[in-house]
Length: 203
Image 1: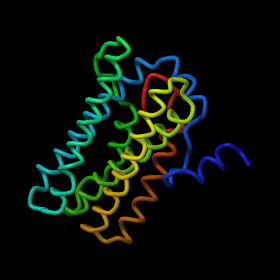
Image 2 (image 1 turned 30 degrees about the horizontal axis):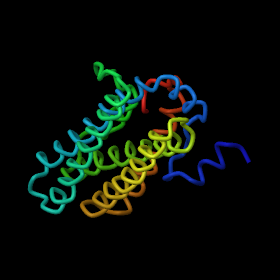
Image 3 (image 1 turned 90 degrees about the vertical axis):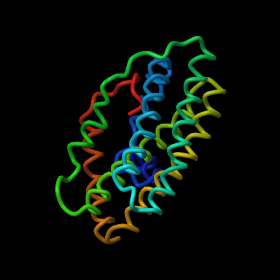
Image 4 (image 1 turned 60 degrees about the vertical axis):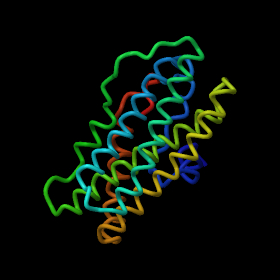
């Protein structure tokens, strides 16, 4: 069985596993990875805040996403601590090609709930990919402190992924959500397949 097939069975339904060489490259650029990770956590919190503001009338959505904002910001603070512990600097934000490509797949127009579904599914996908990469780091990186750190974050991100999917199914037709989710998964696999393998980016 190829590494693609064996890894696929252990993932959060992602259709293409991360190339195992990514961990080795990332380990050699740990400052870049931590800086990029910090920005990812900041953007995750901001994304949830945007949904809360835009769909403020959906009480359950607001109640569900509010603690996720706090948790993502807590992750940001923890990544910043990891940088400081290593005497590393928090550098400027880099272009996030991965998220930019996902944004291109968001369907424009449609009902308000369709729009909500699109962004919930995109967030779920980002969390799923983050979870997969945290798992790779927790299992393969040499730094034992970072192993523990990324294992803890892997568990958290998996919970967020499930939450976003469940929220989408609550506010829109579950069958349509499931169909669209498969389309997102297929698209994301193609995005990853065509992206340059870089060790200075979390995605």
